Length: 261
Image (cartoon, rainbow, N blue to C red; front, side, top):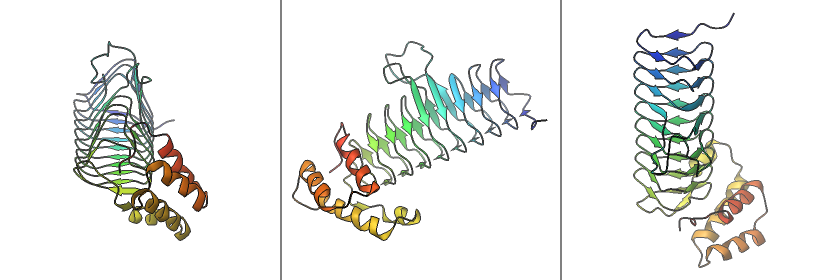
């Protein structure tokens, strides 16, 4: 016999909603007919989860959150686009996350073990990786991509189509208009990386050899007189192609908006 489900008498759960074992749904919450909640997920009071939204197991959805609502996009015409949230992710109070658009692939994705603090917003067609932290009030415009283990400080604003690399740290109140490469730390109105995210990298047990390689790559990218293409040529010629260096180079080569410099 599975774990019992607890639904407060004042909550409104549509007939077609799929509610996993052990779920708890708080007072006055609304769960739409196309919503799926994984086992042991908790939904706080006054939350609204609508649209074609799938939430994984063990998530904690706090009060007054609004998830899976239509994208804030003038071209949206009611299509059945989706929101997916992974496992063991925490979504705190007053967070809003929109579904995708048909133009953007129809899917907004939030990964596993993410921590999205109060008042954050994730726009349509965003792709947020695993173990990402978004501090209070951070906001993602449409089509933003955040790689694994990235951290966004409070009140950060990310422009449409911008990418934030893995293990990057973006300081509070930053306005990011171009891609932030992996492993970097940056802050400011239009931030330029000013070093590696050494605290974060050491916390995740990056070796001293890897840190030395990344420091040299940073020097070539940001502390030389080389342009980005020239810096990439020098990185390829002078630094061992360890996985972190390869990922850094691939990220930069794939950039469509350009990297912050």
